[in-house]
Amino acid sequence: MQISIGKKQPKQNYSASLINFERAVSNQDRQVAGRELVAILQSLEVNGGSIQQIEMDIPRSLTLVAHEDERYFCTRLAVAVSDFFRMPELVFSDAGAIDLLTYQRRLAQVFASSPFLNADHVLRSFDIDLSDHQSQVAVKKGLLQKFCILYFPESNIPLNFELLWQLSPELCISLCFALQSDRFIGTTAAFRKRHILLKWLPTKLSKIKNLNGLNERILHDVYMRCSYDTAAEKHRIKEGINGIIRRHLLENGWQDRNIAPIGYIKGKPIMMVYLEHFHATHSIFRTHSTSLRAAWEQFFLIGFGGSTVDQQGKAVFDIFYPLDTIPLPNNKLKQIRHFCEQYKPAVFYMPSIGMDLTSVFLSNTRLAPIQAVALGHPATTHSPFIDYVIVEDDYVGSEQCFSESLIRLPKDALPYIPSANAPKTVEYCLREEPEMVRIGIASHIMKLNPQFLEACRQIRDKAKVKIHFHFALGASKGIVHIYVERFLKSYLGNDVTAHSHLPYQQYLDVLHQCDMLINPFPFGNTNGIIDMVTLGLVGICKTGPEVHEHIDEGLFKRLGLPDWLIASSVEEYIERAIRLAENHKERLILRRHIIENNGLQTLFTGDPSPMGKVLLEKVKALGM
Image (cartoon, rainbow, N blue to C red):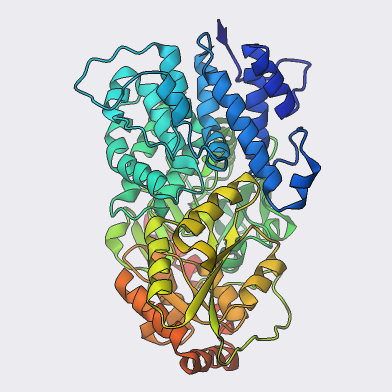
């Protein structure tokens, strides 16, 4: 019997319940068990790994110790899932398998936060060998589906993706997307898989005609999160993603706008702007709203966005069109194209790209004669439809990292605005001769990787002073935090405290107690540096050719910090972090320099007008 679990049944609302899932598995009711499992995974997805909306019974004593309830939940769910997938008669519909591969990252987190770590004990029970592409392997479709769904980033079973591709291209691609989609791909096993797939997958994507039969809902996660790898060609996968999206759009009747005429309102050409996140507390608003406001002098501004744009974000524009009620990227694209045909923009601009699916789809269309992105997510698009990347000059490492032409603005042309939650006053914590140096790391979990943690371990081992690391982690909550904390302690043992995702003021309190900071690499830390300076702290960063590495160097130099705090290699990074930790007087001199010179104001002041002026010159050059 095939079961379809991808759609909710009409007139019924399936709540997320571990109890119901366990009961259905025990009763061998595959249909109900499948729906209950998807409901649980959807709840974990919507709530960022929190189990608060999932029904279960739990011994009260486990609720008294932090994260023990989540560990208990993960263990019970992993056992029930193991039993469910061992049912010989269990076969998923194609849509059901793709749904589970869409949510596979949450299932992987469940196993990774349990004593099992992975589902290899279940995979071995299937008795199939997909390690050697030379062998002739015949695998029943249902068994192959189950294997792919339970093949997690933490799996230690050899898998030859070339063989899997030969058996089922769609399942292979969907598994590859799932393995690269999670925010946390930090462990050696998970990181190695993504590293391999970033090299192997692009050529395979060119052979896929469209997105039908794939888990396309996580495509933007694969697109954006490749930036957190260390491979030199890590962004090349975007070429494959762009190609398959473009083919999919054309197959579904998409037509680019005729861009020959451009419109004017109040004597100004029109700039249309698509916004992923643009509210007062979000970093994209803080880093890109001033230049957009300034561009109002040259352009009539029309914005588009969803519920992640607040009233302050909308106020930047002459006209703002909400897209909240339009569910699918294809439909949003048609609506945006309709407005573009109506207003005939000269410029189509996105401050960031990759945080939602719509922006990635838009980057594969032509809606205006000039199409540009800024570096809200600092990386190239590899799209032939994006003409320009707008970036401040001192943030550029190597232009070879971009497929687009660069509009290099003066270094103060995109001045930041302070966070709406920033403290009004700070009492600085300047410890003269600490027995233990507290090193803070402000990092989203996406930025963690084995190379960075190995550097932390060497800093601890080689320093002549006792070191304790405080990781203030973004997006580390619920079942995810158990997984991340285990990873950190595997390198640093009792010399690390992993702080789960906290409200902004509590997050600052964690960093406030530290003596210094070190920035993660290769993906740096713009907002972490702002928080560092806010608290009168000083730290170490590592620069490199990619803009997301080089931004740290640019910010350190704007702050007037000495060059030796900017490392060019991992070896230099370790050496200089140790120097900063061991030399208390030198560290305090640097901290007082930051405090006395009010270094933060250098990031909040500047002339935001160049972006609008440069884009207007490019519009005039069109001769339209």
